[in-house]
Amino acid sequence: MAGPRNISVSEASRPLLPRHAKLKYDETRKVWVILAPERVLAPDEIAVEVLQLCDGKRSVGDVSDQLAAKYAAPREAILADVIVMLQDLADKGFLTEAREKTP
Amino acid sequence: MSDVLPTIPPDASDSLAVLEKSRSTAETFGIPLAVLLEITHRCPLQCPYCSNPVELDRSGKELTTDEWKKVLSELAEIGVLQVHFSGGEPTARKDLVELVKHASDVGLYTNLITSAVLLTRERLGELADAGLCHVQISFQGIEEGLADRVAGYKGGHRKKLEVAKWTRELDLPLTVNAVMHRQNLHQLPDIIQMSIDLDADRLEVANVQYYGWALKNRAALMPTVAQLDECTAIVEEARERLKGRLTIDYVVPDYYALRPKKCMGGWGRQFFNISPAGKVLPCHAAESITGLDFLSVRSNHSIAWIWQNSDAFNRYRGTGWMKEPCKSCEFREIDFGGCRCQAFALTGDAANTDPACALSPLHETIFKQAEAEAEGETNRFLYRNFAGGTLESGNDA
Image 1: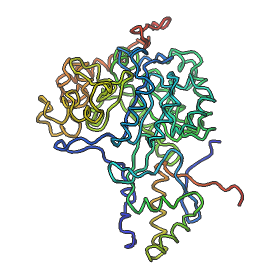
Image 2: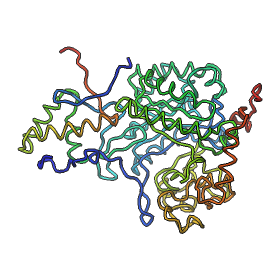
Image 3: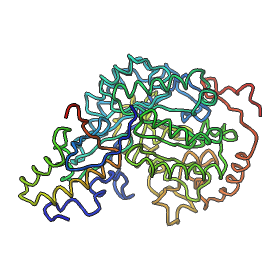
């Protein structure tokens, strides 16, 4: 059960927030927050947009496609930024990956 | 870096900043993001370092189910995001599932801080269904001989391991909380491995803080300087090795530091807790300071009013209350003079500099005394209970 969970984020990863991390809009402070045990993170607006697309079904590549289309921007640059942001979140323990059930 | 996503900075960690809760002393104080709810002081364990006050609230004084629900709704309304259900042992309250459900319904992130020994698998399942977000289980050691002795509860360690396993089977995230002291620090490497084996996401290595019960037991608990240095090295190595796998939060005892800790982020700045009887407190030890009148949620004031305006919260807020050496110290807004409860317990005046600070005139004396205790032979515990404590039998060494 306790297999290694170090996540290496790549274009093919299908990340999502783990159960203990919840993305929520804080009405009182008018900011987006990620709630986690003993921590509240304040993701910036791009991080929020990326995380809203990370549902465990879309791959990082799919997410980048969508953002590239939305901002009419070079996909490769976006992909690189998204991977850096998600890897940072993973290293902090706030990202998990959908596991392959059937390939 | 791409110029189309300018808000992702080169250092991506900035895009996920831990929300800064502190404010300048001139500002009004925003409602804390997280609140600790000590819903009962009842507990089957008798840990000699318990963070509850020596004067425990009896069950008859506890807030009712409806009163706690009202508190939860009020907290969510004023902008609190997280609540920690703690105690005592929170599962000793029969209405815990109902309270967690209500907290979830009003949008709060819920954490259960438990000794786990009273939980059944069925009840843990009910808590999960009620929306519980996270479980934190305390461990007193790595094997039952020592762990059960520290907790003063036979069979506790084995039960904790079982509940930790159920927690993960129910897909609830798990934090292992390990309170460390002289008599169990040698087990730290194994506690880290145990956390991995239990599939925990997070480990709290919390050295005992010496107030209340722990202060009474200081001679039996205080680690040596060498033990602490080793502990720090072990934590640092494990953090690097287990990055992304296990988050390790580390709390050092402040006796051996030169600078005091910024206790609670400063009095009345980032934190409050609510006691079983409904008192709104600047920290869980605050009632040990005599002469302060802490208001209850049963008073006719709102929680927000108590936080912002009550005398007890304003007494040690900011820097205006300080005496020398704090008053003119360049660090006064960095650490706010350390811990008020510790200052009161060790000097008799909560407005004195916390003796953990090297600038306190009492620092040398207290440090030397603690060091002598750490090298001493007293291992016998005074167990925490409603009877004012019971001395351990058969461990006179």
